[in-house]
Amino acid sequence: MTNEITQVYPAPVQDKDLANAEVAYGGYDEYPPSGKDVANIPADSYEYDPFSAQREENAEDYVDFRSMGWVQAGLVATAENIALGALSYPSIFLRLGMVGGLIANIGLGVLAYITAWIMIDFKMKHMGVMNFADAGGLLFGKWGRRILGAGMVAKSIGLGGSHVLAGRQALNTLSTNAICSVWFALIIMIVSVMMSTNREFGKLAILSWVSVSCILTACFITIIATGVQSPSVLVKKGVPIEWHAFPTNPNLMDVIGALTNVVFAYGGNMGVFSWCSEMKNPNDFKKSFLITQAGGIIVYCIVGGTIYAFGGQYVQSPAFTMTTKPVRITAYAFALVCILISGIVGLNVGAKFLYVNSFRNSRLLTSKGLRARLAWVGIVAVMWIAAFILAELIPFFNQLLTIVSSLFSVWFSYGLCGVIWFYNKHPYFAKDGEVRSLSGIWNKVFIFCAVLSIVLSVAITPLGLYSAIEGIKEGYSAGTFKHPFSCS
Image (cartoon, rainbow, N blue to C red):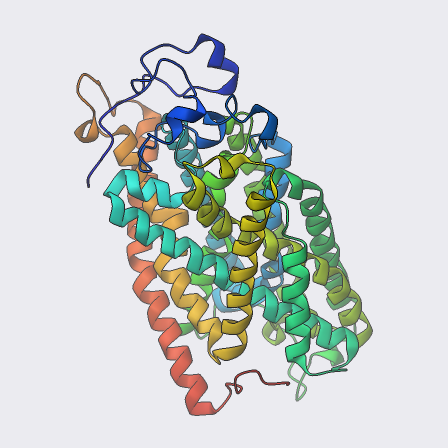
């Protein structure tokens, strides 16, 4: 691993400390450096916060991105993590069994919180790390930044595409296929662009609250409906509904698919650096993400476990489709709100990387002006258009998303966080004059979690790729893939 930054800060500087900042920071006699200095700081310098660096120089034309409190940040992260995917959890429990589903969900959820904690500590030492691409640049040099940046964009566009398809299906259900579904997908894309005009994640907090409320409502409508409806709605050929603590006839593809789905459900970790960077105190995101992860684990366990118990071997994904038509339409009406908002939050993570990367050393980064706003809207629009075209053009889009997730999501949520911990804490990576020790129980816990995260990612990546490739083969052999831009 390479590190192009030779200057080491004694401690991160927060806004509240600016008045007392010392001369030692990066060779500048003030922190943050004034606007005239910003242009002379290398783009790969990760030891200063580019948002705060422009505060004084752009005082009359300054957007304060660092405005979120920990509750706001928690709402935004929760909207990304708890979305339509919650209603695919019953099928995960079907493939892993009740016990296996609970263990996988709780275990990977807790591990994802620990890796987020590692990321936040890393952020506090390197305040200029605004996203995972910056972390990659600090760890591996310019190619690390480029590869992880490309992964962020690919993952964000993939999320946008999946929400275009989910929104299309929701509108098809609500309208009883009133028009060609491609038009519905186009409507979702246009509305998403129109709702993405705000550059600040803090401005999405209220929408995030609405999104989480709507998906929870849709989930509990589905839970209640599957619990009280007649078994005849699901039962086929007189075979009664049964659920099992462990899978009865497991096969490798089913188990791999279920485990990768759980891993991808916690893929919101990709946005941790991005959300931290827009908080008044980034360290408070530990509280924010505790709410997010605890809520996600509880919701996934309740939704997956109860609907699997009610539907047994007949569970479907999404679970709406297990209910009667009136219930399905009602649940989809609430879910549509979540589909729109959570898609915006997810895609904005990749869009914000492109925006910061493009204007990091420019006053446009924090400008209130029309040029800056148009640049943001342009980036968002191009990404949503790409998401729409790819989702409609590629018949195996879901498998393609699995490939992207296997290559990047698992590493964003787990593997790279293990690498980050070693870079941050291990004596081997200590700077000149820095003393590090691995003694103490908590260091031992984090070592275990870091190693586990790396091993998990190394295993999930090829298994996920294998699952996706097999899915593509099966889809073509069975003729289940639709034509590009199909109206069905």
